[in-house]
Structures are given as C-alpha cells and as structure tokens.
Image 1 (cartoon, one colour):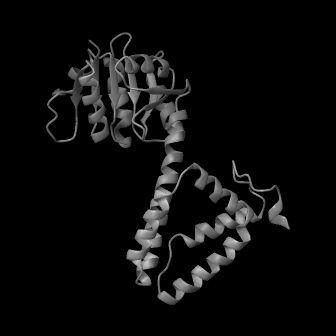
Image 2: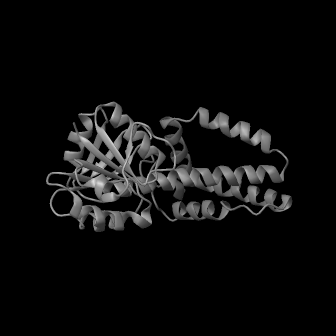
Image 3: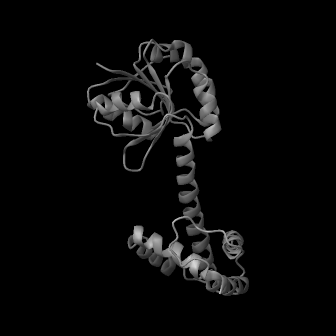
Amino acid sequence: MTRIALIGPSDLGVQLGITLNEAGAEVIGFNLPPTEYSPIHLASNLEQTVESADLVLSFELPQLAEKTAQECAPLLKAGALFADFSSGTPERKKHLAAVFSGNVFADAALTSAGAIDAAGPAANALSDVLSSLGVKVNVVSNISGDVAARTLIRTLFTNGMAEVLADTLWAAESLGIEDWAWSDIKEELTDSNGDRAQALIDDTAYNFKRHQIAMQDVVEMLTSSGYDSTMIAPIQFTHGRIMHGKKIPHSQAPAKKWQR
C-alpha cells in the first residue's frame, strides 16, 4: 500500500487526499483545515507524518513552504518523493528544489480539470505513483518552476477577468443598470469558447483604434456618473502597446493592418 503524507491547509488538497485514500492509498495528514476528515488519519507532528511516507504532498502557505521543505528533507526515507503545491514564483520553486538531494522534488499544481501539472526532477516519478491511483498527471518538464510559471499565468488571467467583472458591475451600478449588466455578463460568458477568445484577440489587434475611441466614450460616460474606473487606465495602456507594434501572440489579424 502506498503511504502518502498530506501537509497544509488546503481544501483542494484534502479532497485529493480523500480521492487517493479511496483509490487504496494510506493517507496521513498534518496541519489540515479544522474540519473532520474521517478517511485521513491526522498525525500529531510533522515527523510522524513524513518519516514513513512514500510520497509527501505539501499544500502549505507560501510563507511556510521553505520551512516545511527544510523540515521534511531530512525526514524522507530512501526513494520517497516530495511534491510542493504552494503558490510561488519559478525562482522560489527552484530554491525549494535545491533543499532536496537527488531526484526527489516536484513542482506541482492542481488544474481546473482535476488533474495535476508536474515539473522538476521527480515529475515522472510522481506521475507513476499517482497515475497508479487513478490521478492524471501532466508532466510538463524536469525543470522546477515550469509549473509555477503556468500557474501564475492562469492567475493573471483569472484575477484579471474577476477584476474586470467587478469594475464593470461598479460602473453599471453608477448608472443604475447593474442587474441588466450582470445578466448580460452571464449570457456573454455562457457563449464563450475558444473561437470567441480568438475573435477577441483578433479584433483587438486589428481594430485597436476603434477600441480606443470606444473607451474614450466610456470615460466620458463614467465621468458624468461619478464612477472612477479601476480598469480603464490599464486597458488604454494595452491599446498603446498594440499601437506601437507589440503583436498579440496567436492573433490572426492581418499583419501591420493597424498602420493603415
């Protein structure tokens, strides 16, 4: 039976632990969220959690990730693996990998599809262990930090979208149409797909001047309503970059059309 140590206050990590337990692994946890998780035995200290584990999954907070890695490294038995799921920069993940000797460390992240992205010297070994328990692992590379880079790009996209949504709803509220705006946003997102994303970047690259003029009208309207938008300035800055020739990757707009 594979013995897996689960460390850190992550609800998604606990759900992964329960899944692994149901697949036949023995899962022992330490410093988990203060809720009852009956399938997962809770250890009283880190040493008890790690010393006999075949695999350690750390979901610790970023500020505790290095301390946890340093404490776990001397406790790992021969052949055991350590996968770090904490958020952080690629450089921070490289620093964590250097704490361990040999091909022990994996830079890992849970994906929205329920799989795991993994990079670093132990990525393939992590895939072997978890795949045998029914968990899909996407091996990105053997370089620690490659998964962290992808995770932060996802964060930029999702946080950026969330902030645009908030700003749009505040702007609509200043005009008394926030209920309509929320309904319209949900309809727009329901119809979104890969083709829609392609159309958006193509239109932005090809018709950036029209977008600039439209944003000027938005500024005039919101000035009248008294709302100070948080997103207009970065949107205008992006338009300026396109105007000065910065190409949007994967845009299929006609080359240099914007100059005419």
